[in-house]
Image (tube, rainbow, N blue to C red; front, side, top):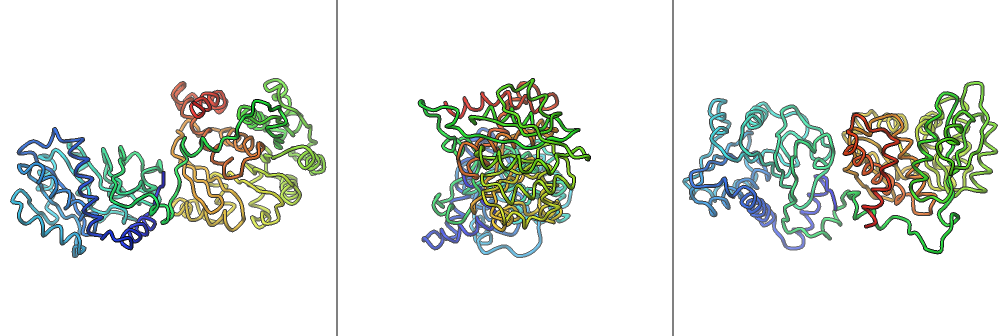
Length: 516
């Protein structure tokens, strides 16, 4: 499934026009499709005498609402439809055209920014309220008149329907203004938009249904788009299991991490990796971090690393690690539970410069890299996957968290391209940028917001990387499986009680779902 930003959607519409479909026809298709969906879902409410309220802006989203009004009246002539224009200014040419087509319908009443009492009365008597004020074109805060209309609509008992994007939500980044429209269902035209997926706005969209408007998938693909990481995307990427294979067939993963005071991170990463098909896992860590692995994961190999006085892994471990990495492993995960010290910075710098197998940098390896400078990535001899959360990516990129959230897709794509890496930008909704493509993951839940979740994800991604699939495929498989296992853990234990180790225990059930 392709997710399109506002600019990409406009590019797709332009391609459709170049192919012979007029903007007027696209609007007609959108309005007819949405009206048919409304009739199919809410037809029992649309009895003779029923009232519908349509909130309108002055642009083409309002034009969609005007087409819907006409189609609904053609289907049920005894409806009453109130059209409320919530903004000042001239109508777009297509909105004006479709408003003129409603002059022959006496069931239509047009209101321009009615007072609060009148608007409350219109909401109270309506069985459906349609929101066509802004669509994909909104950013910032709502004008006072629109905010008042939306606030009153939200308090109504009527079913609330948004056209494309609920008013108050930025369709590209999911940032929502105060008093944004709270939809029971959103009809997305041609494709879902980021706001339908991002958890900051998804709950305001209600159920999302895509309405075809005459732009085929090829045109949508030519316009760009963000690919949804779902079962259909991930299943073909899983490395196959051959009946004549052995443990050497599925890679060797080295996990370097740990320090004197953080002894669980390498265990979680190793357990997660072992559950994801890698042939051999070696934990390279201080003795304090190897002890729980010996107890809880006897399948793992161990490599003891010396400590510096700071409690971090000593730079003296570099030669041992590089010998294991380049002479034994097929991939390496570095950073889990390492702590951020001068020794860590030196170790990470040496590994980036000299490792000849694909590498995942996580946690304190990312913080060390931020201190060293992201330019170091250009010296890497093998592919690198970075797995920062928002704060870590802020340190790496020099951008504020607000800047990242406002433009997460563009900044992720730019960073990945500039430094030649696969970027897994972790958040409530994770974004992956790799090889000029963008992916978004919609599953997962607040129960994953706990210490150790990142270590678990790092182990899963690295396990796939060690099995020889591309960094992009490893990142996609890892992000999807981690979040899907988190959803199963939430179902069983609740978001309050679940732990990262419960997510690991749920991985086999996610594999069953993918493989069946």
